[in-house]
Image (tube, rainbow, N blue to C red; front, side, top):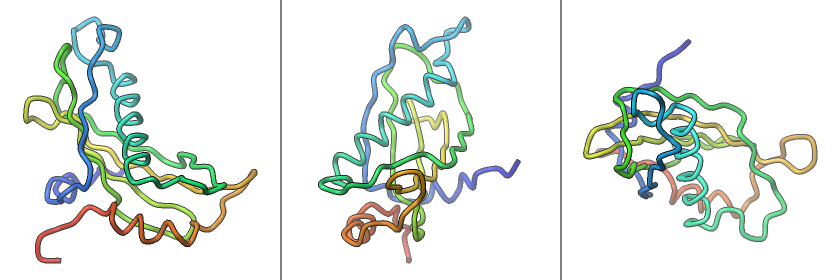
Length: 145
């Protein structure tokens, strides 16, 4: 399995940040936020990101996850909220790739990359034309580029 390029994510400026509260139900027997609960936290942050940039709007497209890669780096604990940074890394013809960093109290707890595909019906379709400008505003930026 290929590891995520954490320095790529850490070196970027993310266009969106939010805090997701942890719930008592999110913790495992060791008192850590469970890996499945963290995947849900990352999903909630992506939804807030999509809504903040009004990506779907009047589009008839559906967004589906084609791939998800999460690497856990530090334990996250209840009851502190999880800060999630979200941005677009790459844009393709029918999909785009998100980058995310989940942190708590200033320490990164997880890194994620997720590919989302646009589809109508059973198969992928090209990204709607009006999404290109929106996705450009949603990109992670890097100093000197």
